[in-house]
Image 1 (cartoon, helix red, strand yellow):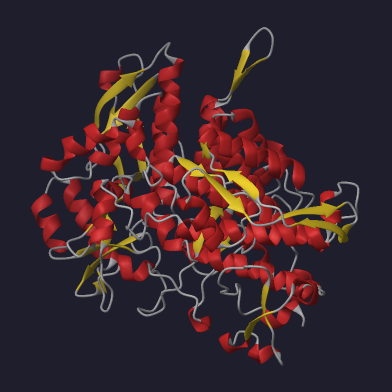
Image 2 (cartoon, one colour; image 1 turned 180 degrees about the vertical axis):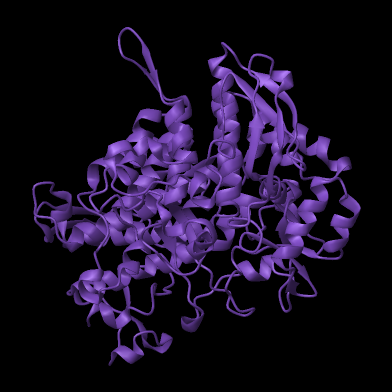
Amino acid sequence: MKMQNIRQHKYLLFGNLIVAMLFLFPSCDDYFNPDQEIYITEDKLLNDWNEYRALEMGLYGLQQNLAEQLIVLGELRADLLTITDNADADLVEIYNFTVSKNNKYASPENFFKLIAATNNFIRLIEKYHPEVKDPSATVNNYDRVYGEALCMRAWAYFNVVRIYGKVPFIHESLTNIDEVQRFLNSSQSYVDSIDIIFGRDGYNNDTVYNNPVVLEKQYYDTDLIIDYFTDELENKIKAVGVDHSINNNDQSWNITIWNPFAMHSLLGLMYLTKGDLSKAAHHFEEIIYFSSEVYRYQLDESFANSNWKSIFNGLDQKEHIFTIWFGKSFSQQNHFQRLFESRQPHDYMLKPSKKAIYNWETIWDDYELLINDAIPSRTELNLLKPGIPGDFSRGYGVSYSYLQNGIAVEDSLIRKMLFLKSVGDFRSAELLIENADTVVWKYSWNKEVFDQDANLILYRAAGVHLWLAEVYTWWAFDRGNFVSTFTQNALNLVNNGSNYGTQSNLPQKGVRGRVGFGGQWDGIKVGNINYLQDPYNNEVVGYIDLTGNFEGIQLYLEDQIMDEKARELAWEGERFYDLMRVAKRRNDPSFLASRVSEKYPSGKREEIYNYLLNEQNWYINYFE
């Protein structure tokens, strides 16, 4: 069966892969019929490449099952998302940092299902195609699918440890969720029933010992997980990602599976999390500087201005690096609209925090300051060019919306509201959106009310640029008689892409620049004198003098980058971990505590702030 015959179904929704499971079928039309599911022996099953590929698609089905959990845990615990009065008990627990073990979003079970299934798949590949472990052997599709499985397993462990703070290491001999659960529920050690030693030339000379194997329960913290899996990905993978476009001429397939750019994204983020800035930079730069595909992931005009929203309408290889795909027509849906939308029949349990909306509505374009650096207190806004408020490319109408009776408020009214605020008429401004529901719209934009099949983007070009800007903010190295720093490159990545220089033949925009906020005045500006402007009328209200304080400049730049991440990447699953990473690098838990607690009502704010000053409370203590 050709791969193009299953083109329309990105992922097969298998259950656990216990020994080896495949859907047998009399025709391609019956391929996805659940009644066709049977168990057969490995030697009969794995005699064709397409059967391996079908099993691998099952792993992506298990990854799909993690979508809502990734968003809820990565965003609701951070500063840009909050609950409504409709929130169920599980979401209220997440919001209040009082998570119980029976909380459906807190359970690691779906992660362990994926880990067990990848263990099994990796075992099968190594058994029947041992050449994948031979670095001198010619690279083939078995190497590529093996690389996909190794990436997926590393990704699963990395997410688990970010959520729980530690993770029990699941031995590779545990290949289904039942074995994993028995192992996790054991007191100290777990006795596995079989020990298989693979022969050097493959399964024909395997020796099977029916001797019990004692597995000691070991918990790995973040550093151990990162060390283990970065080493595995760097040294075991010969290739990653089967090129399906060869058969189906559809490039979108290749960004819905693990691929070389996705692997570099994962490695870069793991190294950044650990604080190894040099290695993080190397992997991020592999994506945006050294791509052999005509600098595919640089930020040109492809998604400039109003076209930015099309990032969330389908798949595009100029922005998407790795995306978990969903499709209503094939019964592959998620609950994002149910969680976020106030339109019937959805539940509207989560909504944007005030800070999230503030980030878009208080950014200004097309203004000019009359600078007086000699006497900074005399710097003022040029009243002949006061600017225009609001990010309408990334903010209103795509990332968030105001719904009145299920209908989105017109852009023109929101622009009028921001103008009224700029002249101090807040009362009239609020009347324009009176009784409106503030909703997350990123997963509803261009969707019908019952679709519930928005994709979840795990890695995309703008995100990598912002991670690399974070690296450049702090990265410095000794050149002998002076120290090189990269803060200007960080600014360029965010503002206008001028850091590329002659390395690119594309018209560069930068993260802010491609949506109109990367110029002389509306770009991020960091220097000795940094002017503070009123968020509602844009007038200069003060300044920060960082003369002679390079660390202060770095901290100020990092704050600006974090605000830019809030505008560009809100509700894509990474916000809480971004806050954790920066707080740890600064050795300042108040960085996270202050930003997260800000969204709580006054009677709750101090309690949450004090609770989050303890780093241990950033994790869900599931394994205590």
